[in-house]
Image (tube, rainbow, N blue to C red; front, side):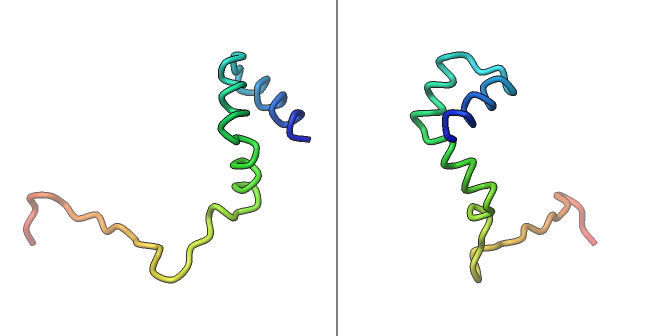
Length: 60
């Protein structure tokens, strides 16, 4: 299954052999699997911080 995923991604993104080797060695398939499951997007309590955009140099 992992090899099939690497082949599909290689074709889809036009990866060279070197890029494919790098993706395999760096654990690309595992990272993709985690993202698809949403495990990489789980936040607990105060781990989420919203950034408030404030205009620079504008006084009210």
